[in-house]
Image 1 (cartoon, one colour):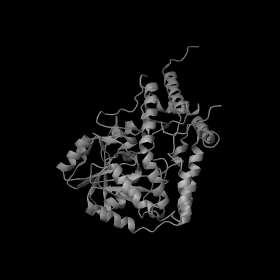
Image 2: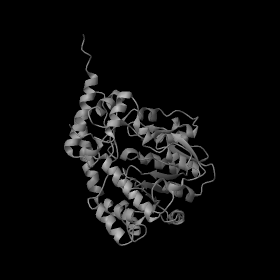
Image 3: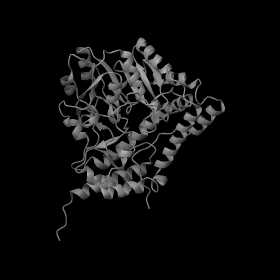
Image 4: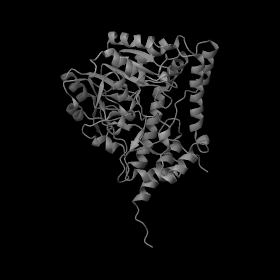
Length: 421
């Protein structure tokens, strides 16, 4: 029997266990010199600006600190893509601001400059472009609009560390940006994140918010590390085949979506949940330093996998693999493609041991928490029909080929007319 392949993969440096052990032996799981070294190396990787690692578990705290530090008048409007994780607009509300949704370009899944322009009002103070799935937004027109209307630009880089636009790293175009280091992100430190700021004074204010948090307990850090290792074990094909996959297979028969239970429940985040609090720990920074050194290697391997999928899927009528404009590079946090019948494709692939799923971010104009009564987001609605195909770097090339062939066979099967009886 072939092992089942999970849609999620986790980047781990080969010496991760040794790094954790050395930090523990030195008594530096929680505090130590690696945090400052990680920040310095990250700033050097991006090439400019000021950075600050934040939070024990959630990179979204970097966005909260940035918004508070920008000191906008209460109720100011922040333009947010209609297609993003619901937490992003909710954090703007926690900061006392009003998210206003603008549609996306369904080809790139990123903020439409034309929709952004339509969303600007006299009360708009900032725009929050999300570089979704590992591909940059169309930044030249976004930045031009921001300059024309005197808007701050805060880039959401949770999916896109290492991606470029016209040769420049995403996260370095606007006034600030934020990154996430949760387990399945491009850089994995089992949680936490980082804020990037162009201006030294803004960086100082963000640093004050980060410094105000208490260090996590050593037991909390140990628990985060244990949880990360368990997740990694759970999604390995040899384990996933007998653990999570039978649930996925049964749900495909019942037309039920089990993955809704994997993600954080949509709810108000005001007051900020206690688990969001805490400083970024030293052992996380040590893991981040090792991961950052290997990031180009990780990205290139994932791109090779994407090229394999492109070669297997690109010639099928009705299938649209990710499209990359010539001015951008893609790091493939997700490989999202349009297919003729995504529901049937998902069922067919899961029954053959390949965990394909619909995209896992939110069409925020549909999320009841926000009570949106503005224009519909047709681009985001279309994007919700794309499927997420496993592409992560820890898979072997032959596993990627199997994934591509499985998707190809299922699409072609759908296209064949039923045999007359």
